Length: 105
Image (tube, rainbow, N blue to C red; front, side):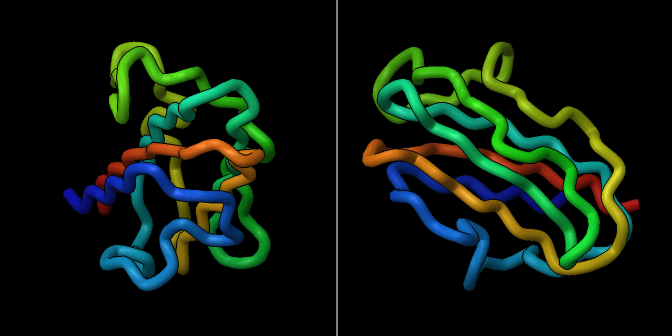
């Protein structure tokens, strides 16, 4: 089950760029995210046409660099087609943390 986690990233058009598990077969995607201050927002898509979420606001982290899987999940086992995955972060000047779990079908 491919898992990707990044901590303290700034706003970026694709937080998955250059990482393993960017191109996947059909899968169920879970994303949890938190930011250090209010205003953290992200969008998740596969390819250029399938958007799984758009401008999802995230919680303020409970503790420094912590993602709490019991409260910070935005996508939970969302079906995603085969293709290249993108996570667009608009962190508005604050550090952003996320974990993405993909259950390849």
